[in-house]
Image 1 (cartoon, rainbow, N blue to C red):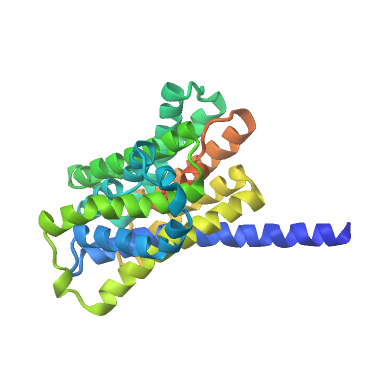
Image 2: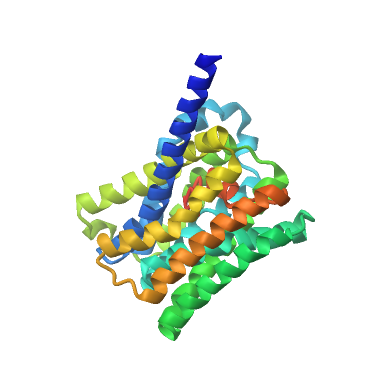
Length: 320
C-alpha cells in the first residue's frame, strides 16, 4: 500500500512538472514565433519549417503505421489536420505581425474554450453549463480590455487571432466528434500539412529562407517542429493521465499571464496596465471555466484541445 501511495505521488509530481512544461512551451511558442517574424524568415518560411521538420521527426511513427495508411490519410484527418495546421499558424503569425505577443495569449487561449463550447452546443448537442458563464464573462472582459487598450491599431491583429482560435476550435470539436486517436493525429497533422503546404510554399509564397542564418533556422526547427509538435503533445498527454483533464486544463489558464511575462522579459515588449489586467482576468476566466465545467458538465475543455493539439497541435497546441 505504501509503495502504491509513493508511486501515485511520483506520478502526480511528474504530471504537474509536465503540465507546467507545456505551459512554458506553449507560451514560449508565441514568443519564438513573434521574434522570428521580426527577423529574416517570413511567416510562410516558419510554417514550412514547422511542418516539414515535424514530419521528419514523426517519420518512424508513419513507417510503423504504413500498413494502415487509410487511418492516417483520409478526409476526416485532413479536416482536423488543417484545423490545427498551416491555416492556424499562418493566421497566428499574421496576427503577431500586427499585434503584441501578449495579446495572442489572451485572445487565442481565451476564446478557445468559448468557441469550443459553442461548437459543441451546435454539433454535439452539449449544453453550456451555467457554472461556466462567469468564466466566459471574464474571458470576454479580458478581450474587451485588449481591444480598448490597443484600439484600431490592434484590431487587425486580434481579428486574425480570432480566426486562428476558430481553426483550433474546429479541429478540437471534429476530432472529438469523429473520435480520432491522438496517435493518429500526431502523424497526420505534420504529414498532411507538409504535403499540402510544400507546393504552396515552393511556388506561391514569398520566402527569405535562403537569406536566414543557420541559428535562426535551427531555432525555429527545434522549437516549432520538435518541442511544440512532438514533446509538448507527449507531456500534455501524460499530464492528463496523471492529473485528469480538468486539472490539466486549469493549469493551461496560466498561459496568458506567462506569455505576457515572457514578452516583457525576452522581447522587451511593453505591457500596459490594461494588458496586464486583461492577461490576469483571462487566466482567471479560463481556470474558472474549466474548474466549474468539470464539476457541472461534460463538454470539451481546453485541455482536450491542447492534448491533441499544437500540434499535434499547437501546439499550437500543442500549440493552444
